[in-house]
Length: 148
Image (cartoon, helix red, strand yellow):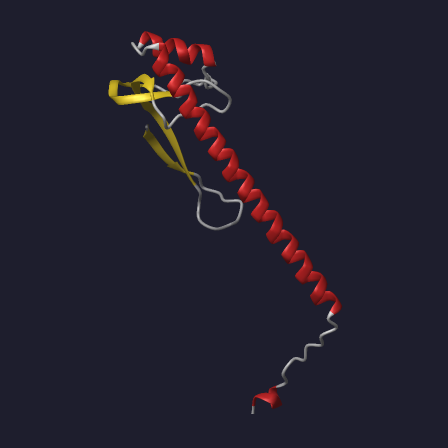
């Protein structure tokens, strides 16, 4: 969560209207969570699902860093190791992997259905456009006398 530090307004505008507003942020509130098995964080490829669990374990306010950082994505081996360290037996971790696979397969099937439906709708629109183009329909515009 970012906390606004200063709000300033410029005096000129490119569109000639009201002055655009600018906000500068002075700090962020960082929430840290424990990690563990979490079915809402299904990995894209393979392996068990891990994610944030429980309430925040630490809340810290700090200034914004100017350096941007990239998000780290855990490999399958790293996710398995995290769950082992959390005390899950290997049998449960294998079950978590199978559950994640089921979710990925169902998401893939749903995506295929959406693509199939979009393709079908596209072909119907194209067919109707061709019919309208060859229908040779003349449209007449009403004149003011037609409205009397």
